[in-house]
Length: 240
Image 1 (cartoon, rainbow, N blue to C red):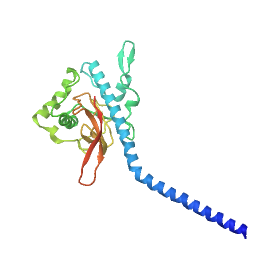
Image 2 (image 1 turned 120 degrees about the vertical axis):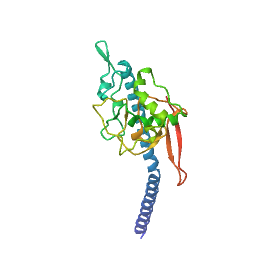
Image 3 (image 1 turned 90 degrees about the horizontal axis):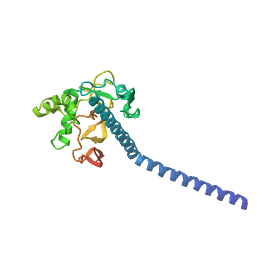
Image 4 (image 1 turned 90 degrees about the vertical axis):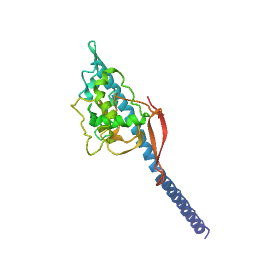
């Protein structure tokens, strides 16, 4: 009888232990479900920050390329930037291989932005608004020939007043063989981060033209608010 009682007691204890383990696992699973959206948003945020960092590296490489050729030549592909610039019998590197890859697009290729008002005008308008109504100066007079049409369109209130580029319209996913003054991601859709006040990754243009820091930040995280509360920007990072 004692042996059977002990066996029954141990079975009950094992059952209670298993129940406790299952209860703990259930609580843990609920906790994971609760934090999953935050984790996913943070992962996306880090990817967007990396995209901005790489895009700005490409913009700097474009600046060096254009200034080297005294404004007479634009790069035709990312490979032109990766090859570097002549320095004696060698080449001077102006773009890291990692920066040549867009971390947001599926194929890793940057969309090439031509020096025309249709693609640059809306972005310039957003930078103008973000910068307190003043369009930042270009890095050197070398770029004036590429910016003059855009600046004039803003001053006269023409095509640049259309706001952000339309994902389904003006934007083209050209990734090679076209003279370009900037790059943007091919990925379309709302972003976690607002770059120069723009909340769409495909509308972030990385170019040496009219860059500015506005209120001291180039991008801010967008934190979802309750219905009717809108979005509140947080997580400021100093701009360049």
